[in-house]
Amino acid sequence: MSKMSKIFTTPLLKNNPITVQVLGICSCLAVTAQLKPALVMAISVTVVVALANLIISCLRNTIPPRIRIIVQLVVVSALVILVNQVLMAFVYDVSKQLSVYVGLIITNCIVMGRLEAFAMSRKPMESLMDGIGNGLGYGIILVILGFVRELFGSGTLFGYPVMEKLGLYKIGYENNGLVIMAPMALILVGVIIWIQRTKDKDLLED
Amino acid sequence: MQMQWLRNYIDKIKPTFSEGGKFPWLSATFGGFETFAFTPNKVTRKGSHVRDAVDMKRAMITVVIALLPALLFGMWNIGYQTSNTLVAQGGEAFSWWYCFWFGLVRMLPMIVVSYVVGLGIEFTYAQIRGHEVYEGFLVSGIIIPMIVPVTTPLWQLALAVAFAVIIGKECFGGTGMNFLNPALVARAFLFFSYPTHMSGDAVWIAADMWGSDALTGATPMGQLATGLAPQASALDMLIGTIPGCTCETSVIAIALGAIILLVSGIASWRTMLSVFVGGGLMGLLFNAIGANSYMQLPFYYHWLMGGFAFGAVFMATDPVTSAQTNCGKWIYGFLIGAFAVLLRVINPAYPEGMMLSILLMNCFAPLIDHCIISRNIKMRQRRAEAARKEVKA
Image 1 (cartoon, helix red, strand yellow):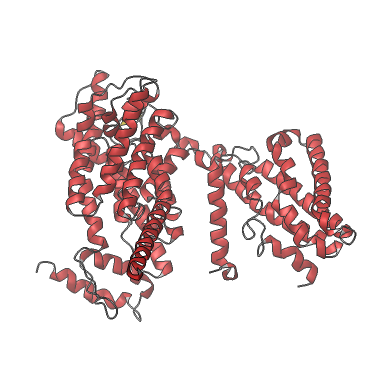
Image 2: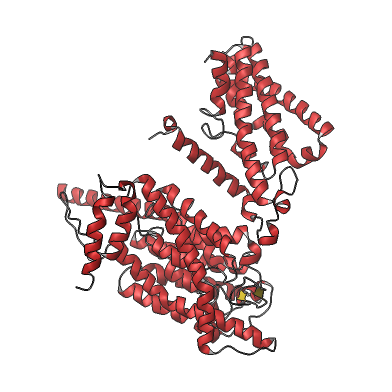
């Protein structure tokens, strides 16, 4: 595997920001009650992490170490405002649903974590790949959670009434109210971590 | 020996499931059934030799026996409640025996579903992990159908049992490792997943023997939560002829179980007593405030209503999830009782506070133990130091 593709693929599974680094849990619980906002959030975070990584990596030799956090925050904030404007312009309803969580991408640990850990010391192209990889790694988990929670909590997918079309309500099926609640999202993340660690013994620590 | 043929048969088929046999991967399942029939004849080879006639399987069986009065009464009460409702609608009353038969037919499928799903998962895990089957589910499996409304659909019950066993127990390492009571996890799952079946004041009475339709009938807790005075008298609640979850209505039947548990020494009297003390004191405190009709309710009503007695006797005393130190048990039990009454009175969204308060204190039990133990260590250290100083002087 070439170095570039390794940088890209590690965060997808082996070093997944949510299940392995356990970062970005807050937004992952908050926006995954339905699939659509989860997907939009995943794309937004990917764009922000990738571009922030690229920009900071380009600037890395000119940023004085003592004020680097401020510089990083300015860059991230600018990107988040851009993303927010785009969302409001094109998918207004989803942007309403996501409410503060778009703005809170600024404080998402994944963004700052990648900037500090990777972009400050690597070349721009590598940083871009790392950003995309981490954004997608975050996105995969969000989409899985959104899928499970919308399907079993509301019986729909992207608003399409799957369970009703399958005729499950007629034979006594009911939507699960617990899946909609944030605690269940946390339990589901736990289950994903459990499965991943059972499959990949390297991740076990003891 | 009448059972000799069974022993012979088990010995005959044993090699098939042992190392080198046909199905060695089924040895855990085989062992589970073998020790269910006979006391294991395993002899300790090295280390300490502490032996007791009561192993985990015997302890669990005792708890199941203690649950029987409540279970039998609950079965009768299911039929009795339906009969009452039918009479109110102008129908004919059931005979005493038909009440019991009706309840038996309603309860059996729930018990079977609970055991099949729960034990199925337990056996699967025992196989995968290669340890013997633990007996923990023997009790949880019977308690779960006893603490849910009789109108709960079976598939929801199956889902709740699976959730409780996998998330509540197996993912922490199985029996003895869980920090939450699995039966209560199952009930909490149902409570939050399908609230229309679990609370409210217009469910919980079976309409017919085979379907899952519900008739309207009000539980005392439901009436209180909506600001009405309960129709049932204290005596009714003591005997248990009120609508409610399947088997937790009769305080007398539960008391019989409590006696069995206390005499056999399986449940801690400290925990049991302190739950009632905590609930009673909290009830008295609310009496003193007396801001609304629920607060003015005589404190002993809290002992009789809902799942308080059942929770105090069978759930709070769970040896795995309760506090382990004696002093800790007092604190743990007292807070369970106090929180249960607090939740009931203050928060009308959760008419039954017992489940949530036991789960809450399950989480805190290790912390309570830690504090008690470290305080004890400090105390003894101080004592030792004082003694040393005395010797020097």
